[in-house]
Amino acid sequence: MAAHTDDESAVLRKVTLRLIPFMALLYLVAFLDRVNVGFAALTMNKDIGLSASAYGLGAGIFFLGYFLFEVPSNLIMERVGARRWIARIMISWGVVSACTALIVGPRSFYLVRFLLGVAEAGFFPGMILYLTYWFPSAVRARVMSMFLVSVPISNVVGSPLSAALLGTSIAGLRGWQTMYVIEAMPALLLGVVTAVWLTDRPAKAAWLTDAERTTLERLLEAEREATRPSHRLRDGLTSPRVWLLALVYFGLIMGFYGLPFWAPQIVRSFGGLTTLQVGLLTAVPYAVASLVMIGWGRRSDRRDERAWHVSLPLLVGAAGFLASGLTSDARVSLAALTLAAVGVYCAFGVFWTLPSAVLAGTAAAGGIALINSVGNLGGYVGPVVVGRLRDSTGHYAAGLYVIAAAMGVAGLLVVLLRNPRH
Image (cartoon, rainbow, N blue to C red; front, top):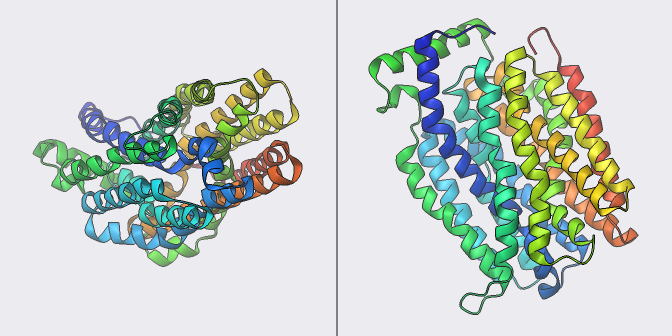
């Protein structure tokens, strides 16, 4: 990994401080609104008559809307700019998320979850694409990890918060309805702030000096000239490596959403816990994962190695899910879920350095969106399979085995992506 000059390091620190905390906050809110359904299920399912299978279908149907509109959304962002498009996405999903409080049965639950996927489509791959506009690949794993640590943190914060809101009633709303309305408000407010705070490209950054803009653009241009990644949309959509990455991401996402969608109910099955205790215990795996994942991203940058830094955590996460399904001891199960969380989030933080290293321009917009949309179908398949297996077997073990198998296969597939650079 080439060392940066003092001027380059200084401008990268300035860009990091300007963008990463804000972007992490945006994704924290996005992820909370996407997965708070896991806590709502503790009381909502009974109130509106959802079986485990119906809940799993509704939780997963989000990703069908996400899949259908992901690539078009990212291509639009490439044209109109991140500032306006991400602001639009946030306001849209905030409105739809609040409307979840209005559901009265399975059909309305399915509809709102599908529309939430449509509203949020393009947000995450748009943010990943946006980071490639500002950071060279040599620092991208640590930057990605700093950004994506918002996901486990959202669960650390959101688990006890959502649990507390389930016992709160405002204006006659039930607890889960109150939770949806209150947790949608930050998305609406931050959507407005985004339109002011984000800058589309380094050349437009008034908060950088002329010298800093020149230094940053020279650094990014030197990397583009050295790597010559594909810029054509067709290459981003037809590359075998892109499709292999999509399969890897499918397995990763099975575990990524297997935790928040089902962990609260798995923890509650330990027995004898209040809703708040469920929330606090559910936060434990995410708290540990958030501490480990940033260090793992730094290690990947320091060693200039990506594939094994994705593969090994995937295999560790698979072992965690497998162990959680095999044990009936609550403490061992929680420890296993913590291991699964560490594996999932360490792999997640480094994974997105792989496509951004071989794609650029319109190819990156299309390829990253394709990987995310196809991979996120794992977010649909996982909850549906776990829900049906829970209904048919009476416990969660079989579903955890399926998630473990998907992550294990993904971990092995990453090895096929290895080349002298990655």
